[in-house]
Image (cartoon, rainbow, N blue to C red; front, side, top):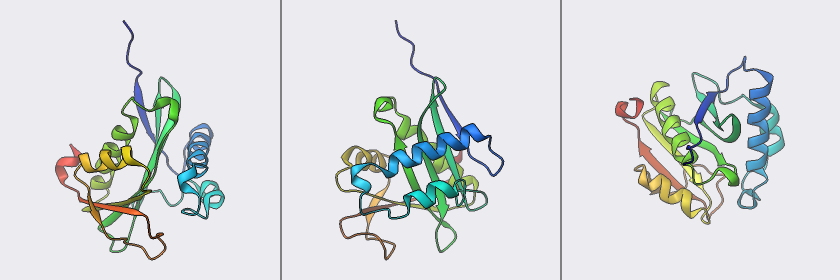
Length: 169
């Protein structure tokens, strides 16, 4: 009988250990190199280098997921304008870790973090070819909305969900 891998999430902070910051940067860079990102995220190298900014409280957070102590995924939340709205960003799970519900656990944890930070609405965008991600977001109650930022490319799928204090539980 095999034992399911243990999932652990660690929050990045301004004082994070170098190893955690390195894992976050590596994961974000891997995400930035995915084929669906081409033409969608033009500042990958700069954003990776700036970590943990802008994902710091009180306007954001960034989580790194570990399965049996191996870094396997990441994701973050940042504030939008108006300030009660946040955006889910950079949710990524390494291909070898897919199927272990890491993306779902990260998304749920980031919704809880967003509620704790005082956000009432969460938005996100995704590429049209990411069908599993779209199904996951829809399963969490996100619904399609029009593009919400002027720099989003036309085929971007955008979603929104009201956050509830029950999400913090």
